Length: 459
Image (cartoon, rainbow, N blue to C red; front, side, top):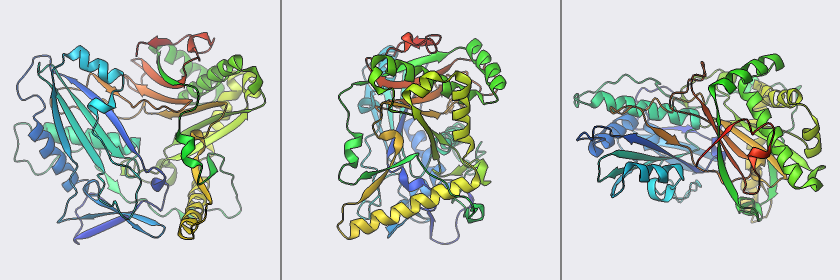
């Protein structure tokens, strides 16, 4: 299905024909825009609301839709005559630019991000919003913080940042031309994940260690904090370091991102082993998210959440003993295995487990719940998501690009997010790159020979 408006009143598409239904959570970001000239009309809230409503009603109708649960199927339903418009709230704070920026850097989502309901999709809550906005203005008129929250089952990171780039482009075009009805979007969206049955190869079978089956009555305990306090450290990879890593990656026969993941895995693994030598024979896990769009031949602007997770695992001692080249190859093989038939196998595995979970619920049985393995507790985890190629700073609403965009603090041990800085270009490495790292507070990254080379940014 394309961006063309449907002829019928009601249209639907499935989020349970891929892995979208796994991600029944909300994700949030904060974008800081500076008003250097203290111009009047800076991010007019009515224009923000108007541009967002036009975007979702004309181009992203599912974002103004609702969920519908029928047995094992979950659909996104939208109506050309009825809209579940994204809510926008505003607030004005008596703060200067430096103070509100500190709240952003400290990931103060309670202050600056809209409050979302539970993201769990159930028949009794079909109207939960797909997208929420909180615009924070300053009495000094020095800046504005745009706090945004989206439902992860509808959009992954790729789709979300294309959505944001499209919203900002549409809003910018409305400046001074409020009667426009057609807009030039940088990423015209498509909807509806296609059938991938043709990718199935019955001669091949796969294990899926990226998922873990946990007793249903215990699964929520996996999300509870353990005894160790998880803190966030931001590392900066300079232009010169990126260039050196790119050359080393070419020598190893892997990608730049794969090598960066290997550096983080080996570096943090060594620190954890040094702190606790008794874990040498236990598990050291690497996992990451893979965007499958190109691998299944669908549009790069598909608005969906089809991200596949992949992983590999060795003992802590094995990772400590392997050289960086070998670990980079492990990472490469974990990502490279996500072929079309592997993706089909993964989808099929998830669907079968979902059927079993629904059967257990209907029969009041305590069975198993499927969880992403990186959420489960392990001695060493390196869970990487890379956002460096997303159009995060291509979000100019008519007042310039954001000064800073803050990804959310992820309080899971071992979570690492590769994140662009404002001038970063994934193709040319002409600006620093950042890595947001969540680890127990007793893990000092500066003590790792591999990680000490990176500048530690003040958080």
